[in-house]
Image (cartoon, rainbow, N blue to C red; front, side):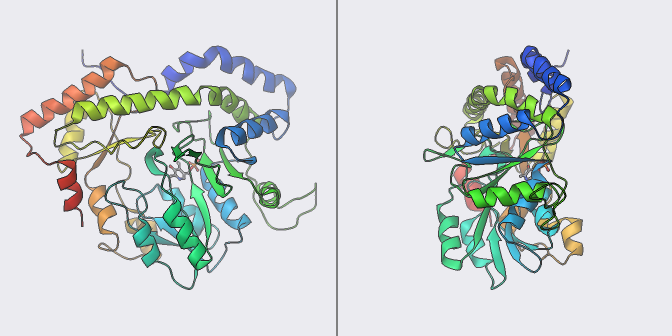
Length: 386
Ligand SMILES: Cc1ncc(COP(=O)(O)O)c(C=O)c1O
């Protein structure tokens, strides 16, 4: 029988931690403390400590986390925010939802993440902030963005929705003291059993502003200093996240092992694995390969019971929503546009077995043999990008 390999296997994860999850949920049900309260505060402390930040503020989802962080940093209507064209839609949407304008920045051909050179070129007198995204689980090198921000007086808000626990040069993402935004959408490396998000910071004043904004702009009950949001992380999700946080280091380590296994098995094939940066830098939320025969490869794998996905099929500036809002057309972000037609995310989750990994890589080898795809090295493929 053809094995079916899902893209993410949350059932396997639940089976492994069920004995810890159920009493944690029970505790919340019996306390009847569903919004705010000790379970949320405990998770916020644990998550801040995990990230190496002074504070974490739980919110309803990762999209709100970005909007609220930008508002707390004073970004608002009329301001421009630099956003990578290669990201999930929410990175830009969160900017638009506060009345600011996303300005799209091309991808780095080596990492597929936001390119600092393109970011510098996109700065105008209206630019107020940069939103670097640690996409796919890979920690961005923040140094060029920090330099740009200092040179132009810009705020940095980081989108870390896909990279909980990634470490760049010894620093965990989120430990910089800058506003850093997380999503706990179920399939994320740290995922709730519903929606959830958080913002970390080390600035007590910003923390206070975040607390108010997430709760109707309210510093004290029935006082409203500004119009905010109803965007809280509920106690049931916090209880689940506290349990899962204990497992996150081992899950991230498993993802890194699987990535190394994939990369080794694909070496020399024209299906190009991502760069494997130094340990800790990439927590492989996604394992994204590149192929000029991407659509045929995806179908070939689907026919063999292997689920894959595309992150993301349309660069943000070319989505219908941003075309309606007057974003530039094709050609504005040529690297992101080319990648969108070639990238494919392979199954990736901590519980993947050796046998499943072998099945996927064998299927890819078979595809290459059957389709007689020409050999192209990673360096050639990178050089071929616009
Ligand atoms: C890069 C990125 N930014 C933002 C978000 C938004 O998070 P959420 O779905 O929790 O609103 C996500 C996740 O979906 C994401 O992957």
